[in-house]
Length: 111
Image (tube, rainbow, N blue to C red):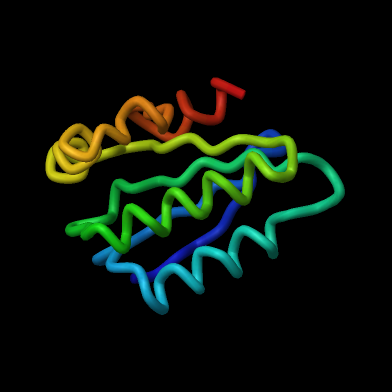
């Protein structure tokens, strides 16, 4: 999995590309969050448009990112969640935990 980081209107945007399977991917996401963190609360959008597959470890990775963001007084939004990952979020009942948006622009605007 590859992670690219940009910023829009003070919101960190992390685009994930490839398979989100936890392990080293979780460490890379954790590092990207800490690089994006300044002195202010961390508001982050995770763009899942490029994720082909996600397993339970990948979900754990997202939960860890949400916990990190909220621990700073910020929050995390998901963008461009595909049907396979949407189904996984629904089955695990995590769809009610994450705020999801159709695209990055809508997710950024929600802050």
